[in-house]
Amino acid sequence: MTEESPRLYVGNLPYVAQKHDIERLFEDNNINIESPTLLFADHSLSKKIDMSIDPFTGRNPSYCFVDFHDHETAQQVLNTMQGLNVRGRPIRINLKTERRQGAGQRPDTRTYDRGWKPKDLPSRDADPDTAYAFDRWNRDDAQSHWIAPLEERRRLWITGLPRIPNQDSLNVEMRELFAQYNVEAVSKLISPHHSEQGEQGSHYSCFVDLADGNEAKNAITMFDGMATPYGKSLLMKSAL
Image (cartoon, rainbow, N blue to C red; front, side, top):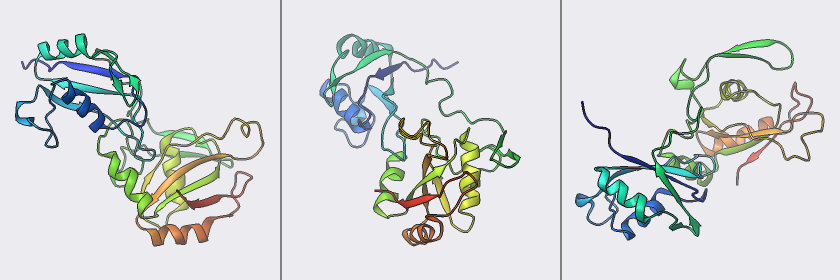
């Protein structure tokens, strides 16, 4: 049986920190990561950095994991790099800590009331081709998904939504709304500002990535200001 590689948790990270910030920190302390972007990668002491980035915000969940080839190097890092700064913030290093419960897990099929009748909703596992939501904390290739849709003007901001109880439900809602378009991704539901939470109507929002800028422009013309079953007009614009 192969022994599991030692893993350290690196926490208290600034949300804007990226993987290259962690690589540079370790390189500056003579701990080289297996990365083609770093010198001496063939003599690396660390196997990899596991950092998830939200593809809609470009932010990390305030922590990452680092795997090592041997326990001696992991212990060296634990003993000598505690409290070092990443982008001006002191990091916390611990032995492997599991991801937050529920992070990246896909919910079961749910039923919820959309305002007129209950509806059975498929889980994201039911059809991978229509699984529009990113598994935000289980991927490390999110940076391209975060930047490209903004640069190509194909990310939409949509508000006027009700409180939708789970990601699968939100996916279905957006799938139905954009049935004539090519949806590439749906963000999590974004809660309204606390000043609006006591008001009647629907104040939740989300981001949706379409296939290209022309589709996004057409969708804004089609849906912005449309009346919804939730007692409010749908507001839609290009995300900045």
